[in-house]
Length: 518
Image (cartoon, rainbow, N blue to C red; front, side, top):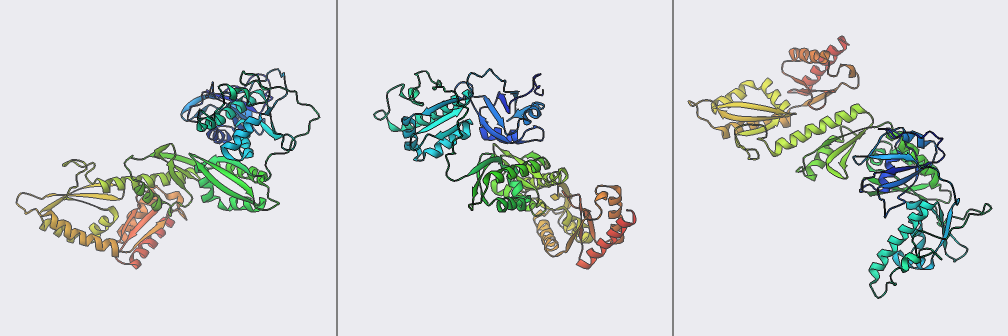
């Protein structure tokens, strides 16, 4: 059920999200609410868990633009498989415009002990809470400033950070019980989350940012950024050159944190970030994505082998495991057709992998998983070519060794099981397999093959009766050439012949027949 917009006008660029699963981080929420398609989102300014100790399933999302909020409220939102509640942040009567408190010297000292770089620690607090932390004069400490819920989050974040320090200090170095809760902010009563509150003077000038060098980061879905690098690498290069920035990627789970650093004095990471997010929105709203499941027993090497086989055929399709679901493969492609074709071909290779590792799967007459010495697996098309051009040789091999065949096709693979022809015949499957394997290997290695790409000129005939008829008539005209649609790729036709000239003539005949009926 979609969230309903309240009757009053929306006057805030913030929403409240409740019911968030415990394994969903702020980065995942940022990625989710940046999506326009099916979410109605936009650029996210910050994500804050304002009551992290008491109510961890609630977050406040602050958008760059207020207009994003009503768009988000028109959709139903499901995050990590769970439907969440989304509503605008209700305006409350303002007692204070902002809350300001000076961070205690004790906290600064502990932050120095923790990492040695206070400013980096304070920057991370600002990123996670949405508050503003600025220096007070020269060497006089820092002020934290923000709305009440942001200051609550600042308190809890500092409390958690320093508690970890105290645990590492040991009992002799740790201060007495209750010291931390009294000393996050200066002059704070013993009750937590009640910093000294001062109205912000109207004439107060904004403080200068802490960082001496401007570095900007943004979070993007890992698979989407991998697709952008694959298909839109020139656009990413243009952003780096136009704004004089370096672009470094840090992958954490299913998110890519993109750090933009100026490479010259004229570098502008903020504009680069805006341009990168605009490219991300454009790409994410135009691509197609789909997923499929794989067997948990499939090895990493086998999966990478399948990917390596697919990439030359689908250079604009990104494929990878889903981070938190390793048995799920996600495909990202420019359109639904390419995504479907890559997915179908992937499934075909999966079937082939299963068949190669377990040739008895699907056959009766033996336990699954045991290798059957009377069974061989071959390429369907090569076997078809042999039956077309070497039929008498095959009949001699089977007959002289007392063999009859039982076959099963899986994708472009053919399982051949050898059975006794009759009680009157000597049954010698080893000899039959040895003779056949020599014939098959020669045909596989020496016989020329070619493919005809229908997408270039005859895309409209793919899967049609016209295509089937053209293949049938080509076979009749070129009786010694094997012609068939390629398995797993219905936009290519395969030709196998004794010489290149023969399959090229058959290909010309096929093209002429198609053009006559176009």
